Length: 326
Image (cartoon, rainbow, N blue to C red; front, side):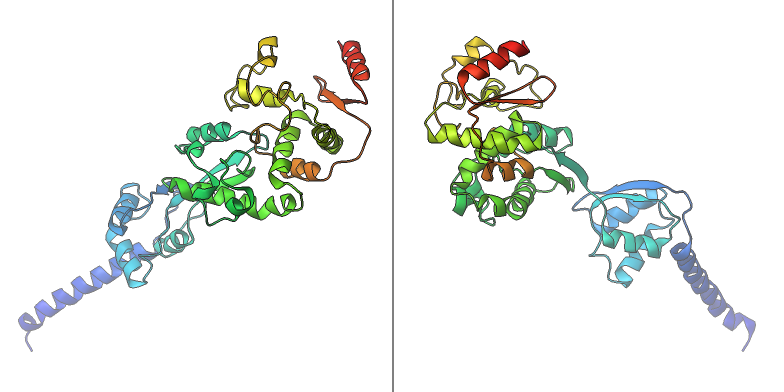
């Protein structure tokens, strides 16, 4: 066979070898430009993802990466999220990383935050979620509605550190938080004779009492005053009303004489019984204290500026201690 006849085949063979060689070079070529951070948005196609990674110089060839993903059936397994890679990597290793999934945005709900505080917290982290528009009946996947009735979400937004991907649906985010409440907090509240009352008292303790051990004593004070039909005289409930449901993001928490005389159901200096709803989302320590009051002879307490709790057995003793402190 003459050279002229085999020449086209040689050209084809060289071209194939070049393509295969280039494919494997791109496949196993390492990116040493680390650490590197990037984001994959939810809903992007494989084509859009690979092209974006190439534009950001994270991979050498979008074609090679896309071909490898389809070849290994990983094209449907890429997860959205924020990624940070600290070690050199190649396309094969990158595919494993994307299959494992990236991180979302971490949000920490602090014990004592109110529903509106949490709304603003999420907004400051890029999530525009209207917690106020929902009730427990909107989340039948939890068992909370069956136990507490059709309440709003105040008190049920379990304090914890959460991680959510951007653009995650509003109701899915809330469902995760409520499910966490059901898992970690509900088992304690179910031990109470009145779980919702216990939750409200826990929210008062969270805002009123700093030392955890004192919350058990204050819990007994509140339960006794309720039983004997006294007003509870809790400042934090009045602050909740004054600040329109905010606390951490409220600039003026000082109670005035006008506030003390206000005709507001959260003014439990005037109205007997518990406030209509929890005034915060309490942590587990306050929940435990609410359902396990430590028996004592006290009927009054106040908190000093340095966070100490001063208990008294009667009104005269209470006033004398306040006067002495001032």
